[in-house]
Length: 92
Image (cartoon, rainbow, N blue to C red; front, side):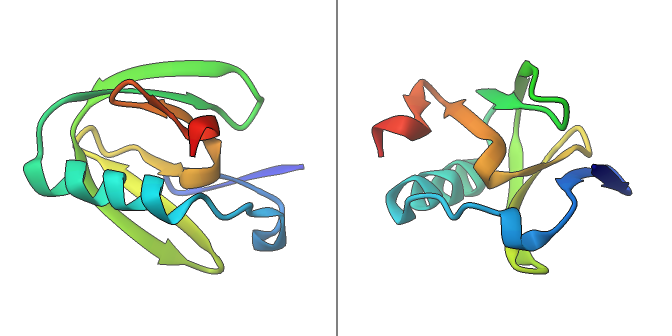
């Protein structure tokens, strides 16, 4: 069951969060620092592949999971990311 909290689409429990690679996390923080538009591919709460070109404004942890915020106001859970700025999460 999916729950939507504000603009954050999350699965039913934080225990289902799968931590991402520290190296990929560092890359996301770098992109948040330079604040330039970047291509982001991710799976939405229904498992469908989504694409955005947006600026990452923040990377943070809350409730046992990690998230990023986009300049558009959207918030994505990091384990839903597939590819960011041409770099695939699966390669890390």
